[in-house]
Image (cartoon, rainbow, N blue to C red; front, side):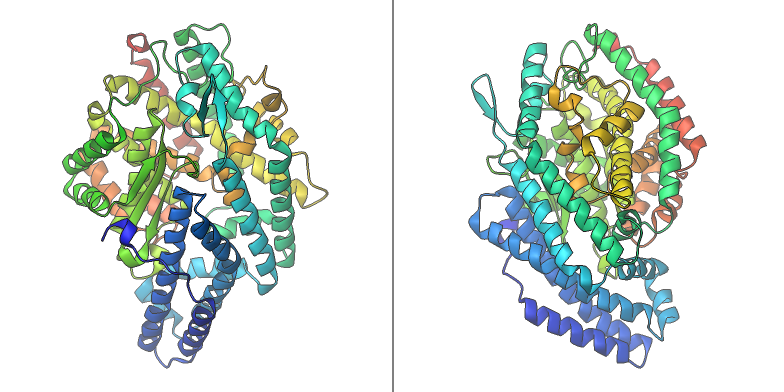
Length: 564
């Protein structure tokens, strides 16, 4: 079957609730671990069916946000998803209270019980109305961005397609394009700030209903952070400030000299080379075909995986009118199918998608037969190791996509390193917002962003753009609205991906073997346990962060960037 043939229908909410209630009760009454495993299997079949329908709706709504049918279906899920989750939480309670827990844990692994405990602690029926409102507000934000129409020199772009102009060689055109993008956010500033303000109040209220002082611990539980705390993350941010921010500042100064400007402005940051940024040499269809060739040559498992993706048409990568912004990979359980969603825009980001999102897709394809749905995916920060590491493992095939592949590889390493301070700034912003919201009225979001931007991004110069000078940059970041605290995950994973990058230079076969083992493990262990399984060092270790910064700087200094 092709993706378009995958069958969608609206799930019967009452029937699902009744079935899950009945099976959960039967699970609790079962007289042996073996009998409980049978009921567990039936419960998971219902969950997989629901997730399949939800993801089919989510994907098709993302592809065309103007489709009235899937817009209505998305609204249904916004309302019903918290109710469904309440039934899953009831099952989790029964699982944790099982008389046969030791036997179940021996069979299924301890991670399932750790996840169940966090989900039980993060939920109460009293917060269901708040969760419904939260879903609706995040959908409003995403739909607002999908409708963006940006006019530059008589041409109309969306928030994805305008990126090509922002990276162009003409500096004045770069500024016009960048100002058009931020002009959209400035024009909708009141609406976006209102959405986030209401989200902040909702999340703080939910935390209080659960007996918590702020949303921060609730946010951590909701994204299943089992083996590190907000204090660990704060120490990580501080280590990044000490070791990565100075390196990023040097790299941007080197870029300023390279492109020949007296001052690196906000519209210059993504323009890396005087000859222009690396751009793919082919159209979308050829890129996908060459991606298939790359994955066949990389390994037999990756070749088989990507052939599956193409045969079942599980990619939608070209930007279109009405399409949601950004990119993602999700999984459709009943069809055993990952799905890659993106918006090609003619920049090197198109190739990043075919490595980053394909890294996610290869992982879930590799672990799709795990015994419980919780193990299809690992937690967010572990999942990003697969994606970011795949970006590096595919370096030898970049000649398939670029005329100057070395330029792309050089730029990609710089992008990976200079992203880290921004990722940390987004995390610091969220912690400060929810910390202040817990003890008083809503804080000034833009003032908080100015503070963290100054601390972690001292090289960023917004002068000349009133919206950016006021501190509005955070308003573009989907994760802040959709998945609180899911952003530091990229930076933690990037530290692991750099380890794979340097290990592959020493013993590529061994590094790849560890990577595949990590993918196959799915979510069957916690983040730091998976890091250890892959033979990596903890990214929370400041010595590791310092060493990666030093090795990256030394590696880049060996490259003559004047050749680009």
